[in-house]
Image 1 (cartoon, rainbow, N blue to C red):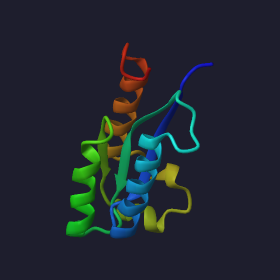
Image 2: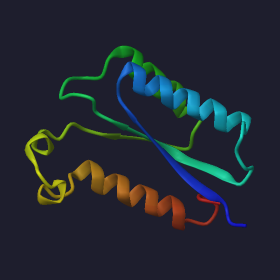
Image 3: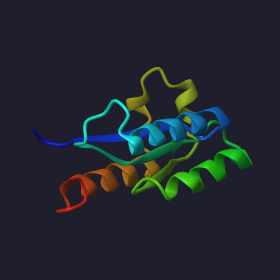
Length: 112
């Protein structure tokens, strides 16, 4: 059976990074998961246009030591008024994320 690749996504907030930390701890202990489950990284999505709270930044720093990658996606104000997010187009952060995940999945030794 092939490995299952997982990308965790959280809000860059205190509660969002707390949940991501718990999920990563569960994965590290293999609690209820197949040994073939691979976490490729964590995506932290901005919770507001302001800087994330210090606790969120500290937790993401901690997670950086536990998962292969941490990716950040900035605030996209235009999405608040969009009926269809596809009308906005992908931000540079999303394009970078898309490329990084594709590379992890297609680079020998990275996604396996």
